[in-house]
Length: 267
Image 1: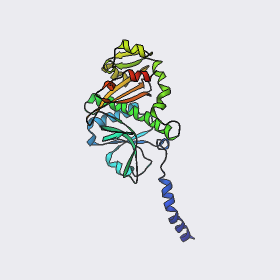
Image 2: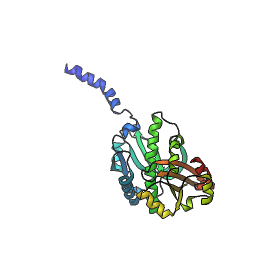
Image 3: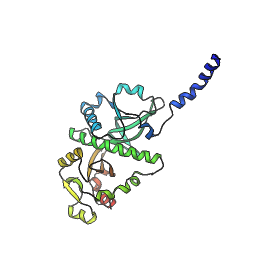
Image 4: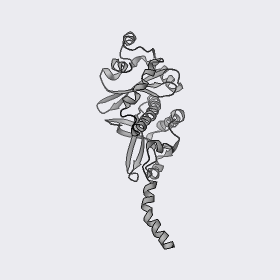
């Protein structure tokens, strides 16, 4: 009897193993903590800032910080999600390579293949840019992950379509933005956009991003790529960090700031 039970367990082992390693949905994976990877090669500033940013603005799931040495074992489970800094990669379907990207990913094929859920570019050139782009990047990653879940569940196909119903909320409150990020005079803007806009200094915008407030704010930043920059333009709810508008453009060119094309999209 014992020998038959042993043979049954041996025969069943591959099926038990397959069941344990079944690739869960993103939503199911987020029921477990996301592992946030720290590494001395990332730099002391990044490791400090990602800790602060996670504590202040990560709401998508529970999370746990790990050293990169722990990644080797943990990534063998296809259902573990990792938030980590990578270099010279594209984001989502964008083939342009950014210098630094924070990506949310899991690993397949026993940890040999990284599958990116989504990501956001960061700029580690200066401490102020690093802080703001990491903070904004975490908000983007969470929102784009929510979109990826909706897409996987058949609710929507495109990010622009998913954000579409939200854009009307921008006009219901004041849109705050740095003066240098507007590609026209305020009087010209008032002719094409009906919502209230308050032009503030970049320092005031940075403070608002950190402390929150009413209305929404626009964050515009140029990220270096080979041969130029990618200008990322996002509008977020100042209180909740919810993404209300998102677009990217090449530089140089008239799309390097928030201009007519962007504001007409909000009408």
